[in-house]
Length: 153
Image 1 (cartoon, helix red, strand yellow):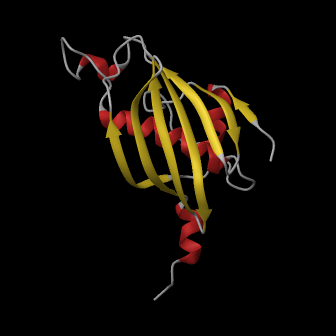
Image 2: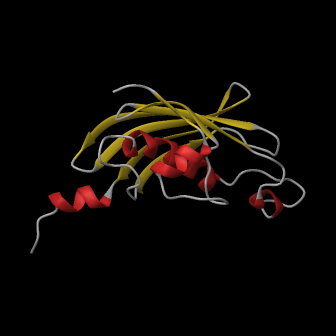
């Protein structure tokens, strides 16, 4: 498959998240079924900086994971027949290396290790100022596809 570049409007065509819960601004490189790379610029106006932690704002870990999952899911939803389908993160093993603070750009790199029967095993990392801020092993599903393989009672 050919490589894609997706701005925020194109990203919205492939997945369901919207502001304020869309954590990818741009996908620089998406190779359907293989990988997706992009970024999120973290303005000081982001809603979560006001509440996590006042006086010492940083991006919550769960939102860091969400940004990795959202970009990783683009590698699946850009496959033929998957555009706009719902994706769910069903497991992740995460390591947080540094805080992400207002004004930083979170560069996100993801890779699909396997994609079978509606289940994706993948890797993702978030990089800020050349340092790994977070990294995760993830399992993501497209339930509509997975349901076809679950035995019925």
